[in-house]
Picture (cartoon, chains in turn red, cyan, green, purple):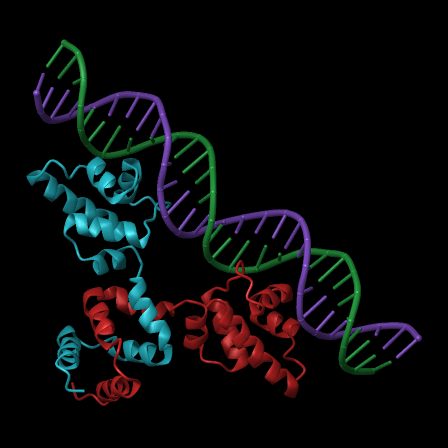
Length: 119
Length: 119
DNA sequence: CATACTGTGTAGTATATAGTACACAAAATA
DNA sequence: TATTTTGTGTACTATATACTACACAGTATG
């Protein structure tokens, strides 16, 4: 559960490293602003190692991954999304619970229709 | 920001207390499972005092308030809602950001249509 | 008027979160 | 082969989170 995040990013990083040597633990860690030993711990799923949202975002950027996905894998939700929900908790909590078991395509249809402004 | 939660529940509790003397800080605290001095701190907005989700839920139940609202006021989002989002972060983060500026009635229409199963 | 109940101040605790700093042996590179 | 560079183990730190325990003075109740 906590472990998938580590495995996921280690995997991605090593695939990038095969093409570009600058994707070592050390260099990625430097670029995202943590100590290499700490990123190493994260990748190996150390239960006492966590990253803040900004570090996760920096890592996502560096690895070319979606920040929302990496945040989710480390048990977090983007602060901006949280704020939207907290401003209208009744509305959004209800909506999200309602959409829980909807298939992706149904939710995507909503997204599209909302974006196209038929509301 | 953190303070509104305290003021909100103190207000509600005192209104209930006017009708029913069992809504003292002490008794409510007992029922929700914390020390009275701690609930007192919470109500006065002590920045070093926080409640976990279950305590907030117990408090909401006791005061007849909506748990999602009290959670939001203390800067949290219900764990079950968080989990729904984390299972499909791309989908839900996108949807929520898209709905950010939609008026309530538009979001409610979506909720209704989804519930009535036109999807 | 005694006593029970009230709200709150002070002090202390445990665990979670989010890291740094440095050393070391193995592997890769020049 | 000398020297970088690599990943990681160990030890340490600071702040946030989530409380308890108890004492105390003021207020209300029997």
